[in-house]
Image (cartoon, rainbow, N blue to C red):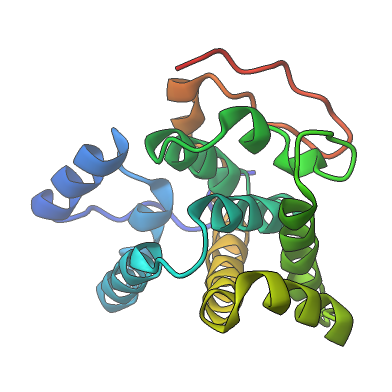
Length: 192
């Protein structure tokens, strides 16, 4: 898929910040820059969401990648693997998220979080009272609220990327985790 909107030229300061953070300018930022207000607000909200700390970082990372796999956002999977590496998360598990139902590496809680992320992503959402209550009991109210809001934000980002035609940009190449597809068993990642 090609970008559905050409890249806009970013201000030098923003471009330098993106390169420092990611090693390259994310194409989704270049596309969004056609509306600088939307871009700034999106980056600010994304930064605030990333700073939340009531829910475990690994659980949020797996939820993000489960949503990305379901929506079909290759850019989000790619960047998710890159961020998992930078946050010292379990890369072997991260590589298996798109096929989490078949993979044997996840704990029951991790599986329940990914199932919840997918249920929130379904249209219409298919979250059940039992599913929510089971997670609430294990995570507590603050983490449950955070996880739910986080998955909502991830849905915004993944769906905008797919609609704009933004695809994988190769960020995960730095951590040598192959992008896995549902039903596909990727090679084990090397230690980075």
